[in-house]
Image 1: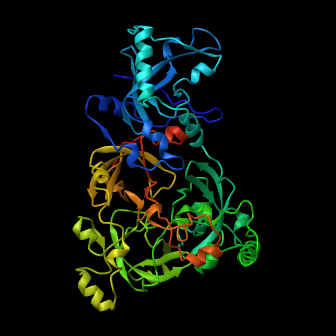
Image 2: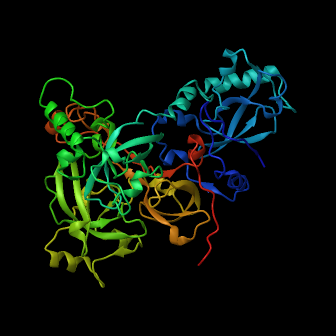
Image 3: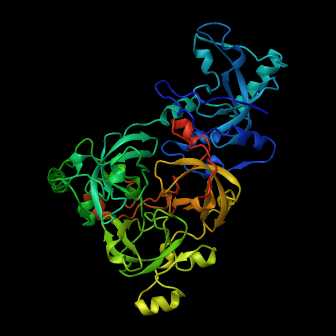
Amino acid sequence: MSQFLEMRLPEGMTPFLGSHTWEDDLNKFEQGAARFVPITKLAHGFGDREIFKFLKDGVIFETPVPEFQSLEEGVEFRWYAKILDVCGYRVRARFLGSDNTFWIHFFSEDVHYFGEGKLRDDVRYKPPPGWAFNKRVLKRYLDKKTRKNMILPKLHEERKRAQHPSNFVGRRVELLGCDDTTKLRVATIRRQCNSRFQVSVSPEDYPQAIEEGCPFLRQTTENFWIDFCSPYIYPVTFSHFARYGTDFPENYKIHVREVVHSWLEPGEPAYDPLDYKLEDSVILAVGYCGDVSNLKVNMKFELLDPFSGKFKSLHVASVVRVLTTPPQLVVTIDGPNSAAESFPLRPNSHYLFPIGYAEEYGLPLETPYPHFQWGEYLKNEKAEPLPVWHFRQNPCFDKERLAWFEPGRFLEAASQVDNHFIGPAKIRSRHGRIVRIGFEGWGENHDELYDIDLQNGITQNSLNHENCKMGMFRYSEYLKIGMRYCLYIFSNPDLLPIGWCELHGYDLRSPVVEIDD
């Protein structure tokens, strides 16, 4: 089996001790007994995807030779290696002219672009033991690889640094309560792990006492992690335009009014430098391309409830309110508490599904009463279905991509129930564009349903300049163009390639053996 090399993080970052590693499963992969969802089919967080075209077999990079690192103090001995296999962020490589193979993280500090060592005085090139090339053959081989653009470029070094941004730390956001989704609170981004934020509400952000039984008590701790695409997080002033319920301190209410008033004046809006603005919120800034004016209150659909704490079934749901600026649907699950349990979602949210989806793809549907039938229910409620054209292509616009989410493939998954938990996981079943994910070491009662895509739609090239503002505009412009602009394609940020956690020093929870009570 190939040697498994530890991830070397940038200076100042430390790996999470005791975190799970993929060593055993990568060994099984070499034996043909394990498969992984490719990195190109999953979310990576912030960063340019351009570098991933070099994450493929045959590409040459340089890396230290483990056997030689104690030969001379202050000198790093490197050699050239060729990628043989790719599993998530991990690559299996072989030193040129050697039989030595090893697994290394693509963004490890020990992976360098071709020729980087020649620019440094503390690097020497030394082939590993058993080297079988001669220098002339090696030069011809490397020249050929260079001509075919099969060498790791200098761009890799830049993209390696871009994996660890901190540009949102300290930003003020509007946060939907985890146990009361009818109100927003002021919160602050405390830590950033690429596109994942640790967000919390502090006593100064909330005008009432934070005590046991508080509807967002869980959001006052260090364990509330969400992705920037989460339905929990909104930019400053969202509450004003959405006319959404708030629990804001008085000084924040004054600030919001000042910002809103400043949009009507020349110059820049009166944001505070630490405000999380509309253009920071990609999900709102490039979140919907369509007209919500023909959507109506009481339209029905099926919903994967993002706040249920279960994620095991779809629910019968309704539109309660249609917001036009920014476009949002306030929705609720049909039942006795529907009036008191509503929350906003983007009109093209990956939690929304057309009527009949659960039945067609073999998923349970939680209904307001037994022996439920959609046709009878619509008639009794005098309701219409949310139009089929409103939903993204079903089950997925990319059949080739969908095929990579076959049952049995491994990945890392962020739990939608315990927001801070990311664990080694496997696809148990696929239901259209929904996959059932099982966490390794946990029983099936802990499985969760995920849509593989966050959203999709038209591309930039299909829109003219007037309608495609790319999200970099003020609310005054935002009101004029009616949100008809570019809609990007996002993968679900809770489904991650293997190696994501070790790249960011995040705890990948080791599998446990579940004990029945």
